[in-house]
Amino acid sequence: MKRLAVYCGSATPHDPRFIDVARTVGRALASRGIGVVYGGGKLGLMGALAGAALEAGGEVIGVIPDQLVSDEVANENCTRLHIVRSMHERKAMFTQLSCGFLTLPGGVGTMDELWEAVSWAQLGYHEKPVGLLNALGYFDHLLAFNKAMADAGFVRPAHQNLIIAEAQLDPLLERLAAHQPATPIFQMKAGDL
Ligand code: AMP
Image (spheres, rainbow, N blue to C red):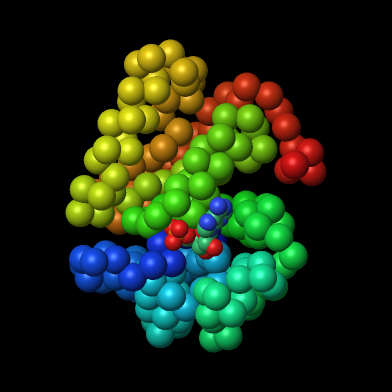
């Protein structure tokens, strides 16, 4: 995998171990030669991830809407920083530039990005793996809810395992690299967005 779109919180969480997780992931991706595509900010886990990857010599591509440039403190140290016009353009670019998705702990924006990657895989917009690092058990409830949706019949059997979740990064990256795309509901193309 050449590049992963990494989604994570822009806030500084109460538990500093989440910041350590982001830094560890940034360093680990750089050391494996996997580039990071992310939201282009300097705050919270996003900033920690990007800073650690850059310090370790990795490629970091930021994509940030112009209206968020000051609020999220755009990271001018990125290898490349794309300033785009809208959230939609930002998310389309995350998908275009990456070979897969990796979600770390975060808040509502991170959830929006994760579920969009899952939903777009169902619809056939992309065939990329969608990874979730369940660090410190943060996503236990989300994974239980994901199973509840499937058990209730809201998710087709072919799509019940679209989220690839592991508590540790190494096995997660192995599973992302070995990913076989599911059969989508439709065959929509990225240009249809
Ligand atoms: P958060 O997890 O809420 O800290 O947000 C992480 C990233 O998602 C940040 O780059 C935010 O700009 C972005 N974001 C926040 N809210 C939304 C939203 N409603 N839709 C899409 N992205 C968002």
